[in-house]
Image (tube, rainbow, N blue to C red):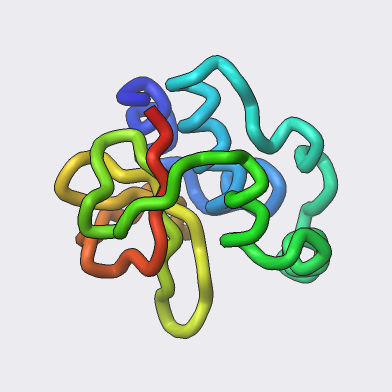
Length: 124
């Protein structure tokens, strides 16, 4: 996962390639060898398209629950775990890097505290 973080450190957010869902899926794939978003790739290239697809799945939390990952409290997330956070009223996924979360932003990866988590799932 360190390689992924290094590669995406300065990569700007991009719907359909470096958004929160695909960044999280890339992190899970790097750790497990399984791409949990394989069937979703290529289904959106804009915010509206992503919102539509995620809504059809029941929302981000429901889409993650289908993966069968064990839910945990966000403050118990460890390196490599998946965390749903809410910023400015919008849900997004991030990867736990230990004592902080990381997710894509317009200027590259954004790092912020675990206290921003709403839900979390154990990946490894």
